[in-house]
Structures are given as structure tokens and as C-alpha cells.
Image (tube, rainbow, N blue to C red; front, side, top):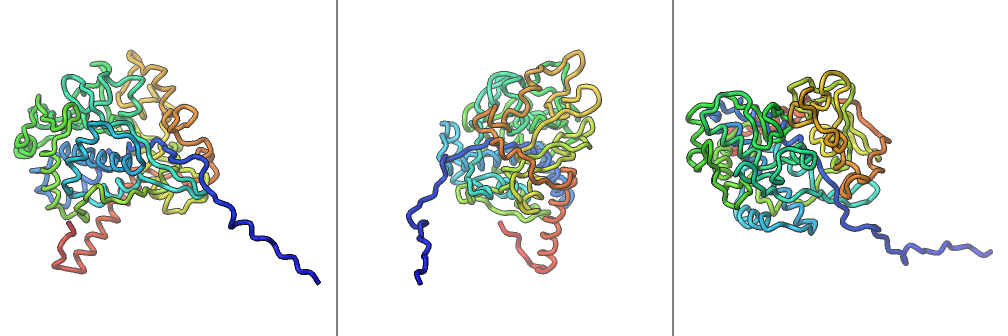
Length: 403
């Protein structure tokens, strides 16, 4: 009797992705609230640190670290680097920096990812901001906050904005709101959706020393790379202060040695649920539902609910000026937001609007998690890392924190 043998055809086939080096935009807006909550925990655990580490300096530091990671992801995926990015990299690759674990995990969340269907994606970012506004550098272009640049100021922190916060902190300006250089109108108030901005808090005179010692004042901010708002002396000073922190595990990071991989949460879109951020609360602290085309793990959904790397921006369903929920300035009835600004708010999320937007298939809502409050999720995330650090110290009384 003849036995049929099925031929093995797989050994003559070579499978590969049709399109190589796929790049997608990433929303880093959650960097700002994660930085602020990390500062809350650090200053609570080491109450003398607020005498030498103003929040504005910590905010500047985490933004500088974010750009180090961005530049490394570009280099890992063979993307073009500007001359300013090359200059920045030539210096920071010769140094190591103390990074609190929550910030390190955020930096590790974006990088090369492989979807569950095998597709490979790398993050795409704008160039390191190197334009001047009001005679100071570190901005995306020479214009104020407008239709063309607002998405970047809401999604990828610019060093110019946090450098201005440092100058304001070093000055004698009172606690409260101040008018950023990129304000589109003197009648409009900036809010927490403008990444890097926050109202000034009361600060001790001695806390200003970290600025004054590095030549930073109310109307001066020395730059090591022209027009970039990069000041390595300030970055080094904050790193040295953080080496004394006990709230979280501290890691001495060599940025070129960081793994190129990110987390698959980079492909999961998040949209607001029926409960919204109240007026005065950052959009990234609202309630969101995260979706996936694939059956991703609960862990991936959990990370996505903290990092919100594909966060969509939507207006509040009720109230005056509902788009102030996500806009970087509080527009008014007398000074409304341009309609074009509202219309293009999610263009970086959609491939039909931006070649580096998320492919439409990833916006299909096949799987989803329940709605969660992003601020509460971040607090749980930070508390778990804090408890882990405390338990390590309890198990080893003479434990030396990793550096």
C-alpha cells in the first residue's frame, strides 16, 4: 500500500517583513506627572532635600534624561541625528547619571518593540529643540504656542520650557503662575498640559543655590550647546543630589548601554472614559481606557495605563471651553482656541494624518481593559517601588543602595 508523504515546503521559504524600519510617534506627556509624583515621594522620604533640590531642577533633570534616551533610540534605529544631537551625545556618553527607578522604568518603556503579530516598530521623535523664543533656546521653533507646534509641546517635553521654569525658580518671582515665553496671548494662563510648566511653589533661598552656583538666574541660563537649553553643570548637580536619596532604588545609568527594547504598551492607544480631569488637573491625570488589537497581557495593559504612550486628546463632554482639558493654555470665550488646533490634536496618533502615526489597525478596539484613573495608577506604581526599596533595606540593615 502506498503511503503519501506530505512534502516539507517550509525549508524553501524565507519570511520577512514587507516594510522594514517602521517608525511611530510616541506621546511622552506622562513624563511630567510621573516626575512630579516621583518628586513627592523623594522629598517626603528625605525632607532635607527640598533645601537643596527645587522641583524645577528635578523637572529639568528628568527632561534632559528623556532626551538622552530619545537620542539613543534614534541611533539604535539608524535615524538621522542633528548636529545638536551629536554634540549632546558626545558629552553625555562620557558620563553616568543617577536615575530613580520610576524614571528609569519610564525611559525603558519606549524603544524597539515587536507586536504580537511579529511586526517591529521603533519610536519616532522630533529633533532636539534648538530654536530661540524670547532670546532663550530649547524650543521647537521660533513661534509661540500655535496650531503647528502645540502637539509637540503637549506630547514631548522641551528643555526650553523647563529651563525657563528654572530661571523663574532662581528669581525672586512669587509663588504662583507665571507667563511662559511661548504664551500665545498675555491674557491666557498656562496649565499643566504644557509639559515642563507648573506654577511656582514657595522655595527656600538656599534651594536656589543649585541654580546660582551654575550661573543660572532670573534672566540668564548658560548653554553648553547653543540654543538648546542644555546645561551639563545643572544636570551633574542634580545627579549628585539624587545620590543621597533613599526613597527609590537609584541606578547609575550609562545611556548608550541601556537596552534598545521598549515595552509593547507603546502600541496600545488610550482614550478618556466618562470621568474626566477637573479644571486645573493635568489631562494625563484623568480616567482612561486602553485598547489593543491583540490579546496583550494584563501587565502590558497595566504599564500602558501608567505610561500612556499612545494617548488620544479629547474635549470634556461638558462645561465651558471643553478643549482646555488637553490644551497647554486655558483659552477663554473672548480668546478661543483656533479651530485648526482642535482639529489636528490627534494627528500624531493617526497614520492617515501623519506618516509616523499609529497604523489604523492598531486603533481597532478588539481588546480593552476597564477604565482606570491614571494618577491613581501612577501612585500605586510608585508605592510598589517604594515598598520594594524599603523591604530591601529591612532585609539587609547594612545594605548599600546600588549606584
